Amino acid sequence: DAGVTQSPTHLIKTRGQQVTLRCSPKSGHDTVSWYQQALGQGPQFIFQYYEEEERQRGNFPDRFSGHQFPNYSSELNVNALLLGDSALYLCASSLYSGSEAFFGQGTRLTVV
Amino acid sequence: AQSVTQLGSHVSVSEGALVLLRCNYSSSVPPYLFWYVQYPNQGLQLLLKYTSAATLVKGINGFEAEFKKSETSFHLTKPSAHMSDAAEYFCAVSDYGNNRLAFGKGNQVVVIP
Image 1 (spheres, rainbow over the protein chains, first blue to last red):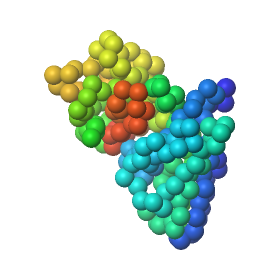
Image 2 (cartoon, rainbow over the protein chains, first blue to last red; image 1 turned 90 degrees about the vertical axis):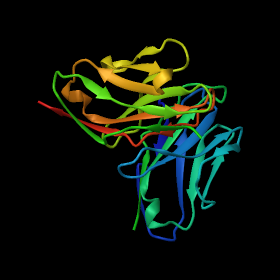
Image 3 (cartoon, rainbow over the protein chains, first blue to last red; image 1 turned 180 degrees about the vertical axis):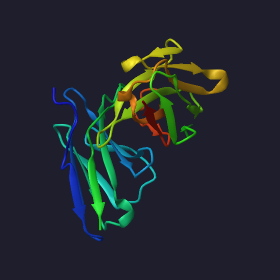
């Protein structure tokens, strides 16, 4: 079992551009959650996907959007990038019925 | 809204000494509580979790934590620090079955030889 895998590992984008991050959940998991971790801070919940629908959302603007595919993998999209979007983006997978969340290694996004 | 508070962003401990990281939570419902560890350039690894069973929870790498409802606390301890314990530690809280985690700001642990 490969666990939770995220791609790419690092990414550099320019202000105003758009970015897509990808996540494959742990085998058997049906729920994917995304977190943003700014430097020196704890992770902040962005949103959660189950059955291809956004089920919960944190305090993030509409520039942050996502998608879940039938195979449970997920994408995080961020439009109109700002310098403040520079962070480590973490994906976590779990069972919607309630279970331990497993985290991927993260994608380090740098906006210049 | 649920939240956790971790005081003291940097914690220095001598090798072989007690590791104590404090976490206080705020929750309107019985909480699920977690401690995660993060090594440099890595994701989060679960150390231990409290899910309303035993109040003293044992985790990996010799860590344990005690849930104290009267103090709304879930402090993490390890009797004897090892150099490999140098990392960042996060306390987190969620509702039952919610899987939406609210994290504290973390403690950066430095182990002094």
